[in-house]
Amino acid sequence: MGETGAKANPCREIVEPFINLVKAPRALWGINLSYLLEGLTYFGILSLLAMFFNDLGLDDIAAGRMVGVLTAGITLAMLILGGTVDWIGVRKSLLIALSAMLVGRILLTVAPQIGHPGLWASAHLTAMAGILVIVIGYGIYQPACYAAVKQFTTPKTAAMGYAMLYALMNLGGFLPGLISPPVRKAYGITGVYWVYVGLTAVGIGVVYFILSKKTIKKTLAIVKASEEKIEEAKNEPGLESTREKIRYYLKNFPIKDARFMFFIFILIPVQTLFAHNWLTLPMYFARAFTGTVSNNFEFFVNLNPILIFILAPMVAALTAEKDTYKMMIIGTTVMASPTFILALGPRMEFVIAYIIIMTIGEAMWQPRFLQWVAEIAPKNMTGIYMGIGQFPWFLTKIITSLYSGWFLMRFCPAGVPPEQTHTEQMWLIYGLIAIVSPLALLAAKGWMGKGLERKRD
Image (cartoon, rainbow, N blue to C red; front, side):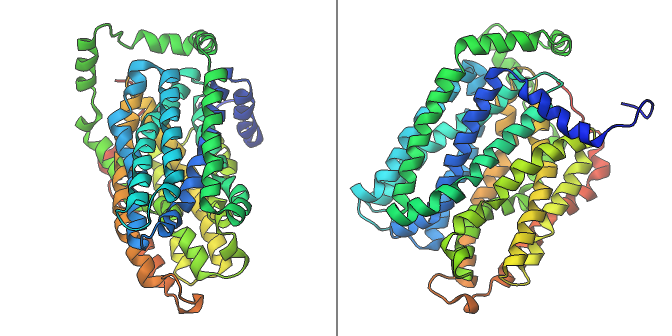
């Protein structure tokens, strides 16, 4: 859009994408509902997982590493299995993925009852087996969801489709803060985990009944009717044989693009803050605070997801025409900066300020990054591009899980009165790590040039 014509109405820019989304096909809403339930289940399990392994007899360092096995394993599985959706389709991929996660979450939940506690004891090994199956399922699930949004949206609804998918998962991530505390106090962590097993089964039903073959066929027909999509399809190759598919995959593999690889890897420092949401914040709230905050730490840990649910679509609507690279620099700067507020000490107003400012920064860059990766992918390669794009996230989870437990034991140990903790140093170091990303993006701006232009081939 140029400078001519009537001035844009900011309120209309915010409201109109939501109207377009409400009118979106049923298949897209099936994906959104599934993602909402999965966000609730995934983040609900994750926020308690380190404590779950503490209950199995593991110390903070070992428990942090087990959380890293789950989170990093998921990203590695996306790299390996992300292309599954490109070969067998969205519906089959989602049903297989959710079924695997159901089995894995049952194994994780029953581990304390059928095994003995301790590092490498039977309960630990059973829980790890459950995590392995969850990892396999989730490695297929998320790329399938983003591939589905790409298939089920038009150019007019795509930006809001990706933003809403990200926002709804975060809405699901907030709900454990309301569900988990009363269940945990009555039935323990395993009681909470049984609730999430049930919700995984509900998620399978959502995909099976709402995302039916008939619904998908009807939705694809609607999307195909879009003139933009038809014109786009004319420029994309049709692949018939398996040999042609393999040759096409190798020709278009994203690791050949140095700018793409720099862009995704330089985000590792700021992404460590995501990992601290489940590796550090639950124990930080439980140990460095007392009273309401300590007793209801799930609620405070999950304030970030509900804020993302509110902010991500609004920010997407207001910044849809903004340059992607500039948004990445600004967003990562805003996200990293408030970590230094926590370095002032464990006070509630500092924590709230950190969560709000960090979330605004996240809303500015994270959905745009995911959309960009999905949209530059050539036809039939969305899954593998999402997998490659998430590989640095795998490294982030591995790296952060290796040192987070040590920092907790040194600066915020269990069994120590809050006034005797030394969390200021911990957060100062974490802030210095996170700020590397925006500084490097800014320094590389000239070299990156047009490296982030959206293109199909």
